[in-house]
Length: 228
Ligand SMILES: C[S@@+](CC[C@H](N)C(=O)[O-])C[C@H]1O[C@@H](n2cnc3c(N)ncnc32)[C@H](O)[C@@H]1O
Image 1 (tube, rainbow, N blue to C red):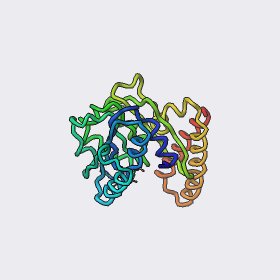
Image 2 (cartoon, protein in one colour):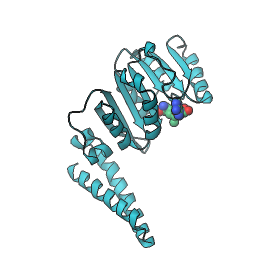
Image 3 (cartoon, rainbow, N blue to C red):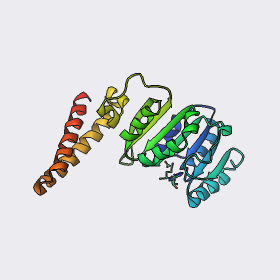
Image 4 (cartoon, rainbow, N blue to C red):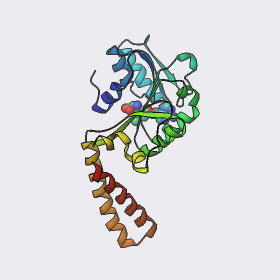
């Protein structure tokens, strides 16, 4: 089975020999790939949608992994119990606010896991803030480009961060700024280009609050760009 570059990157972060809960599994590609590559002991593939879970079941059956990958229909972490002994929770391909809601409602399960691997589609800064507020430490944070789109994968473990992040580190991730990531540079340059066009258009309509907001964003983005 071939995974997309994004899913492959997520799979790379999983601790070897762990038990994985893949929340919002859809096609179950990640758990199937992980099991077939001897990376995990087993997995629980969860989804809120019957249709998505059926796709997962069909794929799991196709690879004959019914004894190794369980499927559960439910909202977020609600169908995971402490007795499942989940080591790694993967939540990928959904909005950051939904991800926060899932973690909040299942905080007991999240607190007892060894590793969270999160790939929010938006509101990435809010996810980083949520993790810090709830005593999770970000140990890896990567921006990548797959098929022309940018994605962020955050890996966190239970524990306090030594120092809280600055505003721009919540927005872009501390490690990628420190590592002078060329992908982050490219992302910021693209966003700046788009924001400057929006600003130019909006100035003609004279919406002061929005103009100020975009000007502030442009300032922050340019400051980070200088460090990259
Ligand atoms: C875009 S797919 C992402 C699939 C896969 N995780 C990936 O990254 O390629 C999002 C999946 O999350 C599921 N989903 C949305 N809200 C959910 C929730 N609250 N709990 C569990 N699954 C959810 C959807 O049904 C859908 O199958």
